[in-house]
Length: 151
Picture 1 (tube, one colour):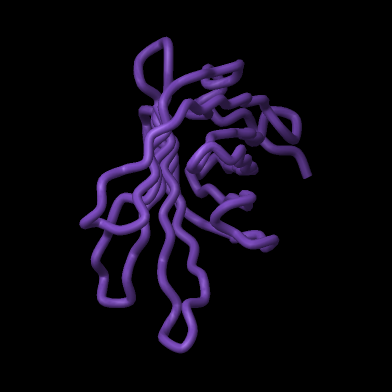
Picture 2: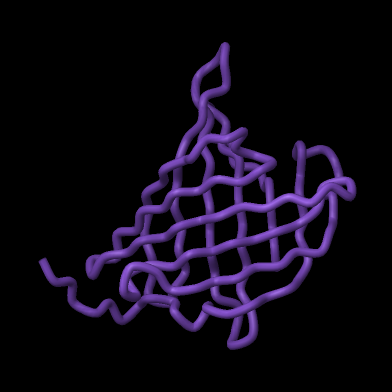
């Protein structure tokens, strides 16, 4: 099966990036701020992106990976894992990409003894010289709280 080129793919995000990472442990606490790096490459014959990122939490180095795959119809799937949030597991997500190249995918994780919580990842172009990676915690009741913002 061949895949047609998809004209909204944010391939201009590829490259080496440095910036600032903010991590919120809860909505009522200030963010923990550290330097962040990201390397973004195309994947699967330009049908996706591979995002490798790093940051520090209280001086301890952390790292994560997001594999984003998109289709001509704007459907996006992603697999995400990182050393700090995921405890050795992979979260699978599904979402969309808009006409400006902004990717938003949602997944979920177990939060025993209660119901699963949601997790949202957004990858947004920010002009010609940057991007914003945002992650949100979503309570079972539908509240959305910032968890990570890397610029």
